[in-house]
Image (cartoon, rainbow, N blue to C red; front, side, top):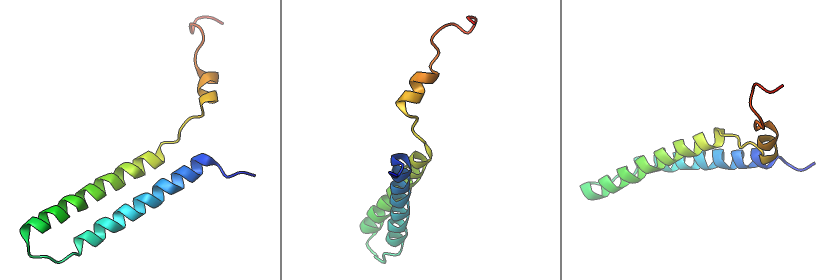
Length: 81
């Protein structure tokens, strides 16, 4: 039996989400007194967190197989029976 590609993609995205969160946590621990460096680190940390959230949201969206969309698409008016 072949693994479900959608599940594999979802797991990969969730793994990426965890990695991005870890990266953001690590950036928060960098100790530097230079305000310019701190600003860059904060911007990168914020970006990592936003991307992590977007990746998690994407992982939750289950793509609908094209065949299923074609099968469920209405072909006539609802009044026809």
